[in-house]
Length: 361
Ligand SMILES: [Zn+2]
Ligand SMILES: [Zn+2]
Image 1 (tube, rainbow, N blue to C red):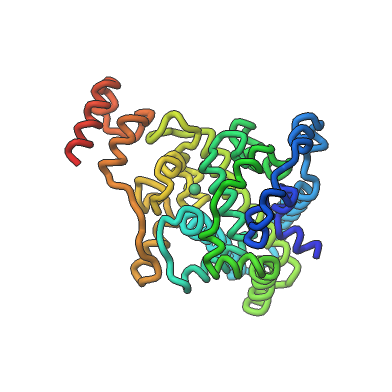
Image 2 (tube, rainbow, N blue to C red):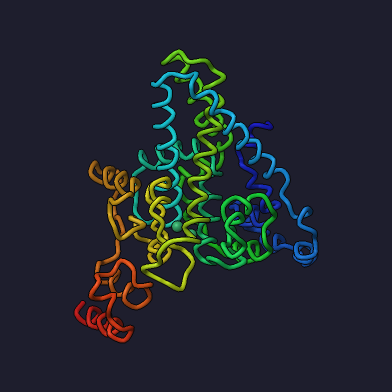
């Protein structure tokens, strides 16, 4: 059971069981009793930092990272076939988070048929970044209350906090207060998501540890211990790749679509996070399935979704018109990603051009 607790990644701890239970379907009838108490809010601000640490989750993260780094010594003890297998496994887990939990279930930016949804759900358990329901609920809170105290990984509390620190400390009371207002009924309505929630622990045990340990053992003849240890390396990489969107892509980089928000465009984050580093665009137009104005450019997730659309597994991909994107850039952008002649225009001329494009549409 300890392993299962590790795999849950401490998410139950973050919410101390309050908001977490509140929006579960079985708890809808008594949600009024689930608001955090006043004393809890007071305690949060008054308590010394050490008292606010989520010790359970912190220990799990530390153990995973130590084992992940230590597992590097085993890289020379497995075959090239196993290394290729582990790489594919890492890519699959990443794509299931970006194409599945993020673009499909959180933002509903396209529709997917049951076979592809099931594939994404199973691969999602390789990533072990919590069940789909909780991942999506947290991300919807992040978008709705971005860069405020109600944002679970508020960048205003620092780069470390927005990267990993938010998982190591108890939540700000506003995350409970405002997060409880997020509607996630559509997630509960999806039987694939319900299956993921119900059997999450066992699925993670099987897909994140069992298969990547036993399959290469029987297929390629590598020893079990190195294969098991490499699971922690995969998790360490996968976690940090995903977290880099919350941290670096809210910190450095250009803001071509809205200069007044923190989310930014970071190319290297798109490389490691399968196209999720075009984050200023994504926060401006969260329902575009591309999460970018650049199509396939460093965007493995869009490539996968388009591939699935070509074989009929994906439909109704939502996009934003080029005119709307240009208007947004002219009115609110920081001037990057614009042709030079437009960059040299005055603010007034840019706004006039935006109006002209709007009138012509
Ligand atoms: Zn998003
Ligand atoms: Zn964000």
